Image 1 (cartoon, rainbow, N blue to C red):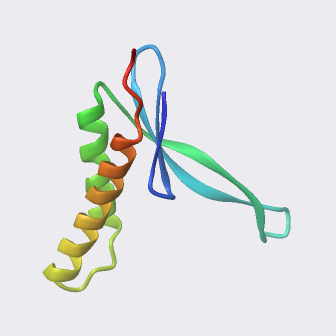
Image 2 (tube, rainbow, N blue to C red; image 1 turned 180 degrees about the vertical axis):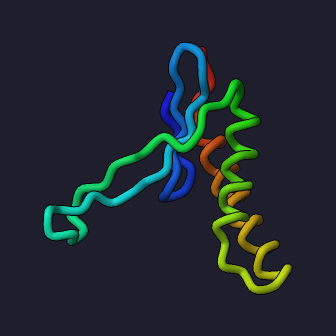
Length: 93
């Protein structure tokens, strides 16, 4: 399984876990950002629901919102990205 959630997160899985991955940009020896980007595992979860809740929580903690209205808007945007990602999943036939 590989599901992109927005531009910065990807949900993958292995035999035992649902894995939340976050995009990062590689740097060269001089410390300059290269054009290559990759994903790092930021959490392992036993189900998709837990992984998506963790994604929302990470976004809340990393938000630079200075008011509850800004934070609410940010959370709504993240939930919309999740909704779009889940809609893209094709049913098994």
